[in-house]
Picture 1 (tube, rainbow, N blue to C red):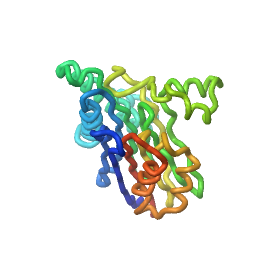
Picture 2 (cartoon, helix red, strand yellow):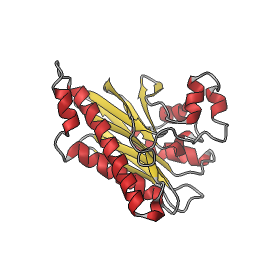
Picture 3 (tube, helix red, strand yellow):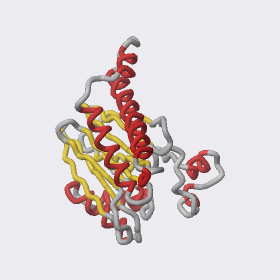
Picture 4 (cartoon, rainbow, N blue to C red):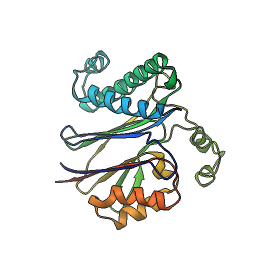
Length: 254
């Protein structure tokens, strides 16, 4: 598959620091968005560390022992091994970020969301922790590929909140998992087959807070792929978004 990739990040109108970080590594097919949290710019530290650590573990290092154990199961599915590497990378990032926060008091309590896309051949592999999201635009439809790790999402799953009301509650940003702050993590992972014409979107909640999925779909329908990341970020800011906003788009073609 040929990949066409774009990214846009913006600190937004209020915050002094951009605590989002992202990676577009087209050569190795690795794409990451991280949204940091923590006072005194510690969120910047956490998100940047997460992106660097996850990328390095996926690209530059041999399979860790955890993924070798997967190889001992027959039959071996390469997708299982890749997903295990993603889980391992997320947890290593969490351990190292937490260790850094203990060494540097000014970063105490820092953490970050992370959403990762790895493209191998005709497969797209995803992993995420937190409320940064991945979407797939295919055949005119927008499908959310990730489920937020938030208290509000738990309320939705339990039937105590509707998705519409969930967007209005004041505690919607309380995370049940984050890389670094929460210690060991359990990333959600999945693999999808890629079709020519697919567009994948990774984003921080600076996009999804001001724009619901329908509003995002309107922008995706209206914009060519080379302008989509910019257009989505601008739409979020024009809709009153106050947070940092980061968007990575990856379009696949034969």
